[in-house]
Length: 222
Image (cartoon, rainbow, N blue to C red):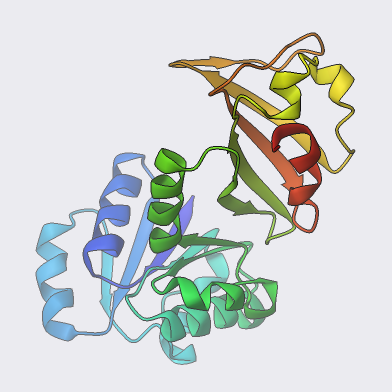
């Protein structure tokens, strides 16, 4: 698979190294020429170009039309949006992944800007903090399918209807817009079964339609 990465900072560099180890063809664009020269020796096997990825001509020179994936991994959200938009609209890249640096900008990273998948480190860390302290709340783990679907987690309290009522998964009658993916009990992931019953402190991982993630609240939140 051919992958083009915009941004030669610590994130872009780490991604490039991982992808080369997985035998992908990797091109990395870094706007600072001194940094680009340094990366050429640090990233054997990676084609490093000293180029601003926000410029159409530079993306064309990187042969973006032949890329399977573009990763906008700069430290600037505006640059990542520009790279994403150009990649999708001008070069028709099938899969565009964009890094979000400031979680307040998360609402911009959607298909309007050419983003197929957005990755927000601040939001992820916040979710992990919430997961450690929040019981009986919906924690958003990840947006999928251009935000149309969400992967969410709920840690069950003792008074959650599913726990207090002793109901099976089948008896909960979850809406069609929501599916239980797995239940983590202690340190074991459990495959959901119609006869499964829930206990306090179960971590229920669900996938839900983006506009319906709260429809599962009646079953899992008191």
